[in-house]
Image (cartoon, rainbow, N blue to C red):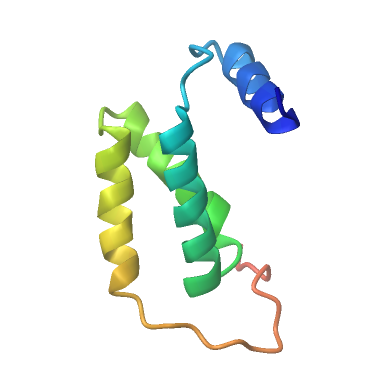
Length: 92
């Protein structure tokens, strides 16, 4: 088993979730969306988007439906242009 698999199983167990909470295909879709959001919107938006998907799933949305919704939303976002400012500067 890989370090990633070990971590996913540990995190699921620690959060009192079934160890198979993230199937291989769901993991691939989440990672692909995270990459696309990080490159197309802002780097910091990738993990925050995964969190939002988790909240939606926690409220009852099917995981693949939540992913599809945000893939559609991402397709309508204009391509970002690189800047000299890091995208981790957040207004609080």
